[in-house]
Image (cartoon, rainbow, N blue to C red; front, top):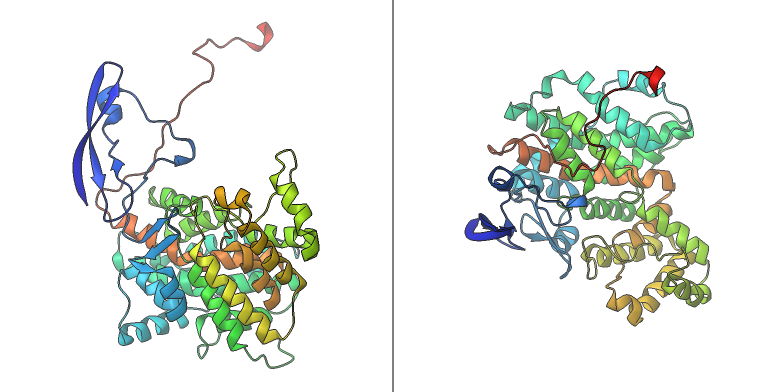
Length: 428
């Protein structure tokens, strides 16, 4: 990182502020001394023009449709790597050697079981509890079971906690799913890879043997890769803000899951399915395209456009190919997939959507894939949480290891009442 000099004019006063230059992307103005120099704060609701931290993990250029993890394009990682390899990359900064990968895979695999008392913990939930509410509670409760990995100042404990969270997140998500069905929990197996293990824990039953479909396992592994991290989005910023207070890693990841649960963040692929079902058939698409262009109509094209990506989301192209693989394996044609293909074709040839850069995003096809595998829509954000756990941990770990990190404390523009005196209730 390099610095240049810049200045800001506030009234008649000129304030010198450094301009920080990263290896890629936009420059940022270092505002840390603005308030002390002038008594004035910056105002940026949603932090849309604010860099909240310095990071070396994920770079994205929404205008160009670029997503890099530690410098590696997401397309290469999804096509050539596997999820645990990407986990290692995000946590440690480099791709593992063969020996390092074997060791990392072994450590994650052999931490997938959860404490047996967790099963009784689940019995406190209603049968119809949403999987994300169970995930928030159970992940947060891990700190009550694993006291030996909550000291954030101990590098070894940080590593152990990270291993445990990556390993146990799919186990807890599968337990939440099984609990909603009234089926017995399925224990993980050490002879299966990460995605295969998760599929078996979700869909196996004691009455018969379950054979993991390798096409499904590869598709799920790819979905995990595509959702592993996306820089400082809402849930990641939540994890960093919670962690800045010194909270233990289990509590921080639970906070991230709670943020992810919001429909604007982790529920987009479910909204896409609802929209495709509402459209129903390819021949009805022109009607809904017209509705999407009508500002007075509440209908919106879900799965198009992105808060960050203003070009074609590189993850969406991979997801589209993955959808073809899954449905080809099933040997069936989903009518909603036909609707999705035609809707994408029509929208991408319409100047209205092209000029507004409303391209398909990663959520456009992911819901179709997960539904084809057998997951209900209530599990979609839980799967997202499993995938994003490593990104949250990498960001949390980076923050903790930064000697300049401070507890988050955003300021505010107060617009309430001025100071006034208390009046006794009898005189009001």
